[in-house]
Each structure stands twice: as C-alpha cells, then as structure tokens.
Image 1 (cartoon, rainbow, N blue to C red):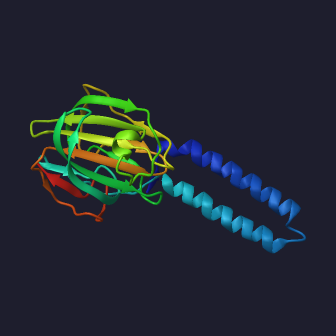
Image 2: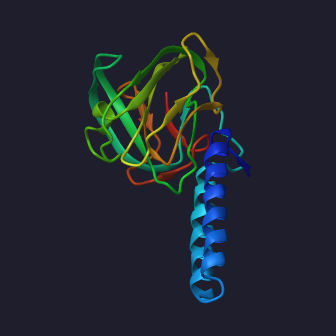
Length: 218
C-alpha cells in the first residue's frame, strides 16, 4: 500500500494538529487526569489513522479488456437506469453510479482506454451523493473518453463531505484503462454514462473495486 500524492498536505496538517493536541493534553492533564489524557491520545490517534486511510492506494492486479468497462471507483452501486443525458450526448443513455463512502479508496481510474474528447468542470451544490439530483446539480467534473467501441462519460461528483474534486485529464490526451483519472477527497460518487443496450455486469448494492471489477461489456 502507498499514500496518494493528494494526501501529503492533509496528512501533514493532521499530524501537526495531532501532535499539538496531545502535547497540550499531557502538559495540562497528564499529572492530574492521566486517564483523560490517554483517552484524548487514543481518540485523536484513531482519527489521524482514519484520515491517513482516505489517501491509501492498495496494491492491486488491475483488470484490462478492450470491450470491458472497468469500475472507475471503489464503492457501492447505487443507480442502474436509463436517463436522458443532457450535458454531452443529448440523448438516452445508461447510467451506472457508484457511491464512495469515507472508508473507500478515493482514487478514480479510467474505465476504458481512448482519447479524451470532452473535459468540463461544473460548479454546483453539495447535496448528499445518493440524492437523485446530485448528478446534475452538484459540483462535478465530467470527462468523455472515446475509442473505436464507444464514448464513455465519467462524472466525478462532490457530495455533502467531498468538497474537492481533482481531475488529471485534458482534451486530446490518450489515456489507458486503469490509469488515474483523478481523485475525490473524502468520498462521494462517480457516474458512468454508457450507450443504451450495453451489458451491465454489476447489480444494485453490489460492492465494487476501482480498476478491478468489470462494470459493463461494450
């Protein structure tokens, strides 16, 4: 396991706060209230380790396949439905959405290989990630990857806790399946928009792994 580069500043800041809280705790409480100081140390250590876990990247054997659409994120499948996609395609599409909890790995990966033909950031609200309107009203970053099989739209969507979306792609860039697409700090949601008729290989409420689970077959 490694730590993602997006976590260095957050972990450093958390470590500083952890140190200051416990230095103050043992100075002012250590002699007269040692149990209280110990409780503060344990609670702050658990919180610090939890923050570190946000930015972990576990070692995985990534799935590859020209016809496969691989899950771009860890989490739980919360939506599988046909929609009228109004941002890019302007027609009916199949949407599969993955909810990322704070406990999930937060790196996002390219579901397919191809050329980035669309990349746009949208300001928006911070509705809870499972809200039906979060896909269109929340802060989000949309990218479309095109290859000879299909065009796949991926939306990184902010939620009530996730207030920073990071995207590494640019229009005209050739990307490879499984490589990093971006990062959402502290979890939220990723939507994958596919052609109608695409075979979906996951089910509602299924737990999936980014870069590993086959989401659909083109």
